[in-house]
Image 1 (tube, rainbow, N blue to C red):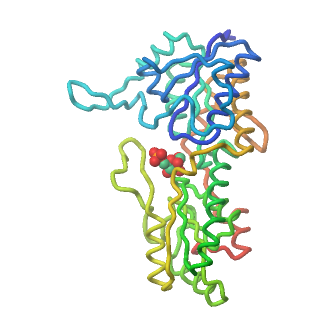
Image 2 (image 1 turned 30 degrees about the horizontal axis):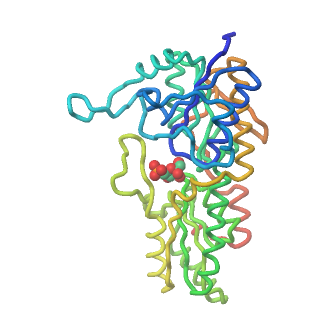
Image 3 (image 1 turned 45 degrees about the vertical axis):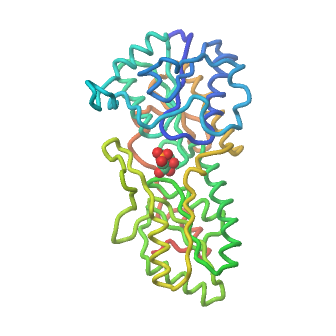
Length: 365
Ligand code: F6P
């Protein structure tokens, strides 16, 4: 059993509410319970490749007051993959493998383990380092809630609360103006934020990637509401929603080469089409990064703290290469290799969809 003295911690990929609560959970339990030193690595993997000015000790003092803060005190990056690192070589931008530099820096820092907090992409990089002999522990994060191995990721519930509040606000203005209000929410290729906020916010239609929509069915729903006296409608559109005969909407300049496809435009497309088909006036709200910011809700603070503490317990047991997760409402762990590369999607005929359809919500099918 390896004796642990010093651990590192970094946050990679997009930020989300609850990251600071995890950093706090890991640091508090590492210092108070296990007596380890904790090193914060700034800006995700970039901090391991180019550590100058990016390494600092985390103490009980430096992590005070961060539980309720959004973002990450360590900073993050979704472009610093050391195995595919953008660098300037002889004046030209090139993509090179600098993973050996990162490994050397872990050794120089004397880190017995690195806690890596991130989504699918970040955890895949963590696995590559593990395969090359670096002790890592993964902690899953994403507002999209699309990581298969865990019932929930922290950040998701906060995003749902934010989207629900937006729907509550749109409701009154939609009704006053007899408009079709379209709200586009995040989630990438999964419809979790859309379906949960749509249910909580009283949406009339919810469009998710898992159920390709027929725009005519959507128009029928709006027309039947109008005929019954409800001259307004609320439509939640997941950014990854797609028509039965088409593809998802991707923003121009998306960086597919780095595996980062930027989604966007689904809401505008749908608003234009329903106006044409129904004659209703429509407006679009793209909620965007508001969903990623702000203070985590209490569920996320608790889950983050549990994940942070569980990560230190795995380290103490030398269970490197594993990722903490929530399974049937219990904190557990799974090898990172089994946790990545398969998305957790909304079941088209599962509980949530059946519940929604039973109360008259249309998925455009
Ligand atoms: O994965 C989290 C997420 O917020 C997605 O829901 C969204 O598609 C994407 O990240 C946005 O990424 P960026 O912050 O790079 O624009």
